[in-house]
Length: 297
Image (cartoon, rainbow, N blue to C red; front, side, top):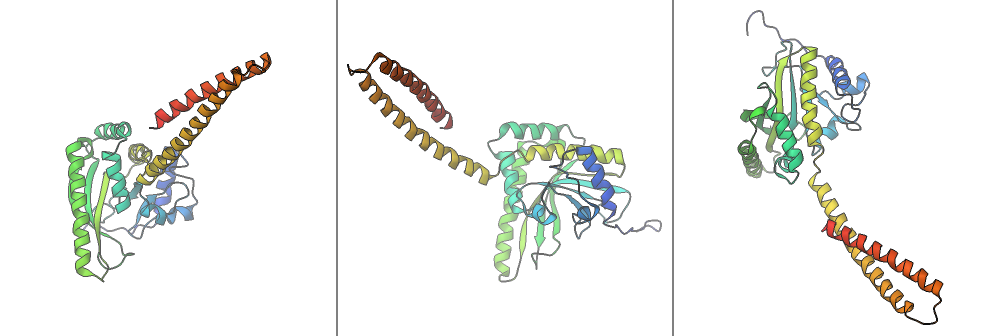
C-alpha cells in the first residue's frame, strides 16, 4: 500500500444518501420503495454493500429469491475506499441461476431480445462475469467468490450465453461432488452471475445513469415468469380447456333438444320464436367456446 493511501471505514449509514438518490431517480415504489433510514441500513450486508430490495421484501428474502437483484458497493475490488462505487445486477443463488437460464434460453424471445438489445447499447464499463460462490463450513458464513470468466456486457451473444450456462452447470456439478466428499461436513459451491457490473467514480450524475441502466434491465428480467408460474398457468389452461369442452357438449345437447321441440306442432308461434332466438344465442356462444378452446390448445 502506498504511504498516501488509507483505508476508510464505511459506515452503513453512508448508504442512506445513495439509496434515496436511487429511489428519486427510478421513481417506482415497487422497485425502490420509500424506506426509513433504519430500514435502509437493514439492507446493508455484513460485507458492507447495499441490496436494493423490491417492495415488501427484506434482505433475507431477496438473497434467497429466484429473481435477480441489484446491489451497490462503496468499496472497490481491493476493499479500499477511493471515492469509487460499484453497481451490479446479480443472479446470486441456485434458484436465480435457473431463472437466468430461463430468461436467456426460454420461450420468452421478445423480452430476451429486448434485454440483449439494451445490453449491447451499454458502454464498455459494464461487465458480465461468472464466479464460484463458496461456503465451506457454515450456511450463514459470508461467501467466498472466485472469478471464472468475464466479458463486456455490450458483447453479449448466444455463444457467451451458452458458455456462461456451461460454466455454471460445471460449477454446480463440481460443488455437489465436493460436498459428497466432505459429508457430513457442510459445503456449498455454486455459480453466481453478475449480468451487469460496473465500477465508477462516485459522482451523483454517474451514479444516476448507472442506476437507470441497471434497473432498466432488471425490470425486463422481472417480466419473465418463473418455471413455477409457467407450470401453474399451464395447469390452469388445461383445467379451463376441460371445462370448456364439457360446457360445449352441454350446449350442443341443448341445441339438439331445442330443434326437436321446434318441430312439435302444438307449440305456438311465440314459443317457436323464443326457441329460435335462444337457439341462435346458443350457437353464437358455442362458436365463442370453440374459439377459446382452440386458442388455449
